Amino acid sequence: MTIQEVADTLVKLCSEGKFQEATEALYSPDIVSMEAAAPPGGSRESKGLAAVKAKGEWWVANHEVHGATVEGPLVAGAHFAVTFKMDVTFKPQSKRFTLEEVAVYKVVDGKIVYEEFFYAM
Amino acid sequence: MTIQEVADTLVKLCSEGKFQEATEALYSPDIVSMEAAAPPGGSRESKGLAAVKAKGEWWVANHEVHGATVEGPLVAGAHFAVTFKMDVTFKPQSKRFTLEEVAVYKVVDGKIVYEEFFYAM
Image (cartoon, rainbow over all chains, first blue to last red; front, side, top):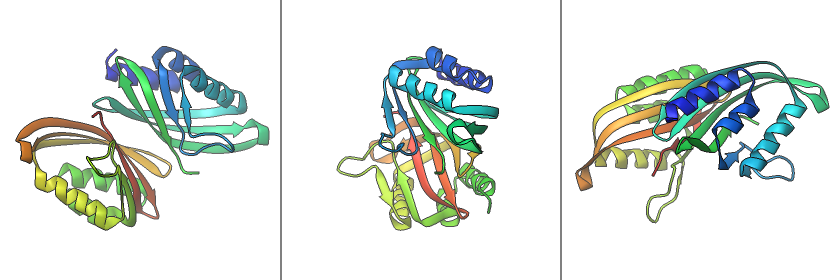
C-alpha cells in the first residue's frame, strides 16, 4: 500500500471503531508508539506490536466510546497526521470526558512504524 | 485568537511565503521548536523566540523557494497539524529537492508555544 492508502485505511477503520483491526492490518512488528505523557510508573514509549496491542486492549477495556470523529489524513512524505475527537467514559472512575488529539504516523514499506499522540494533559 | 484562528492564520501566512511574519504574529516568547533530527553539532530543540527566529532566518537565507503548498489545518484540543510541501534549492550546494513534512503545533492563550516537524532524513 502507498502511504495515502495506509492513511485512508487507518481513518476508515478508526472511524468505524475498529482500532484493533487497524493495528492488525497496518502496523509493523517494530512499531514504536509514543504518548504525550507517561502513565504513573510507566513510559511514554511502547515498543513492538505486542506492547502496542496490549496498550490498545487496556484502552478498549477501560473506556466506553459514546462517539468518535476522525479527521484527515494530511499526508506529506513518509508521514501523515490525523485528529481524533472522542466522547468517552473512563470506566474505572465513571468519568465522561472528551478526548481531542493530533496523531502523527510514519510509514515505511507500507506499514506504520511510528505513531505519536499530542494532547493536553 | 482561538486555536482555529491561530491555525488558519499560520496556514494563510505560510502559503504566502510569509514565514517570518507568522513567527512574529503567532509565536510565544517561550516557543520551543523541535526538528526531526539535530543538525551536525547542534540540537533538535530550539528554545525561545530569538533562537527560533534565528533558525528561520538561516533557513530563508540558505534556501530558494520555487513553490510551496501548505495543507490543513487539522485542529484537536490545544494542537493542530499542517503539512508543508516545498520545492526548494539549498543554495550552499545548489541542490534542488522537495521537502515534505508534517508539522504539529501547540497553542496556549492564543500563541504557539510548541512546534515539531516530522520528515524523513
